[in-house]
Picture 1 (tube, rainbow, N blue to C red):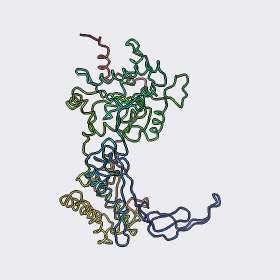
Picture 2: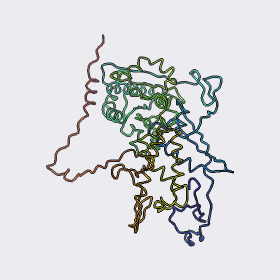
Picture 3: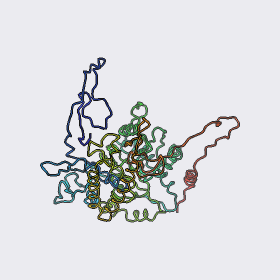
Picture 4: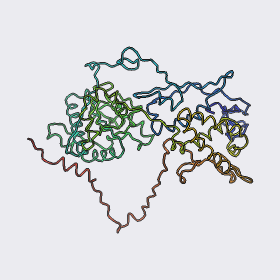
Length: 511
């Protein structure tokens, strides 16, 4: 119904399509004061005329590849004819730092790019943003590079966290609320593995040593477990809004705080923070290692220093040649890093993308373009209209050829032929039925299957763009763990944390 493919209008529930297995009429409901309702015939509605794509720079890589493939079905369903003229929906996309946007848009939407507003006379003023020199009234963001040859990366990060957290507390003790932007430290990581290791270090080593920073001329500070949070895919969707709300909370004297306004001392985040996190009070970030993409680096570090002076410290890993190269060219790189933004990769009809998403495109077009095949059992009518199926195949091949060339179109043609042959062979001959999904009646088998139930097959369809590989279920058998003679569990500190603590406790030497 999203694309206007309806055949009726229920007086109680609104528009409906043949796939809805519901009664055509409803009796009156005295309890809720509802009159009787019936379904009236209704023709197709006008499909969407405008598609707005926000954060276009994120639609790249594996995500962009599948989005570009699915756009084959979306565009066909949103296209209609007016006085013999084929009208496609207009696409308006907003993007951040990208390079070769014309190629990305061509691969995603098969469109030409028209930039609005057009390029002006000065590169420093592009209508949406204006470059200016920092002033006391309009502060900017300062980048700091830190590299410690001969010291483990975990130790360098721990030392950096300790210095910033303790120094911020010292300034807060002197100047109170004006230091609030730097009281929350945002730690940025390129991988969950690195973030997980630092989370253990923050909970253990950093929290312990912060209480002893007074001997170094800084202020002591206490980190409580609830004041250290993560902004990663490991968090549930219900917890993320609470974390974002807590990021808005300012630091107050502990005696003036209430349970609802406790601020966050340390926020450990992955690239999830690069999108939609617009917290004006953030002013301090520590980046672990140089991110792989310059666009990612720009987007992540721009989360701090929006309303107040921002400080971004990148801790480089001296064992990685790429990090060393960035450290050696630190000033030049940061003065020109918009020139270093990498081109985006979108390959909608690559072989692996075809394996993952072509079946969904074919099934969506067959089911939704013609209401005859819209009901669940419409899947068994694959041979009812050969000309209709050929039209669908031609539409997919035309798009594949326009994006990838003749060789890609031939690859897609072979893949479609194999899927159609298997689809036709799956239709039961007698006594049973074939549906797009399996029904509980015992006679309707499903054509499409969910990923992860067995090995990947031709008719597996993704439930979301996160389902790139099957999940693993862990079953914990805890029977007998509480027996008197059971093995005694001893929780030890992780080896990397022990090594970091040893290096921190070594006496300092001066030359």
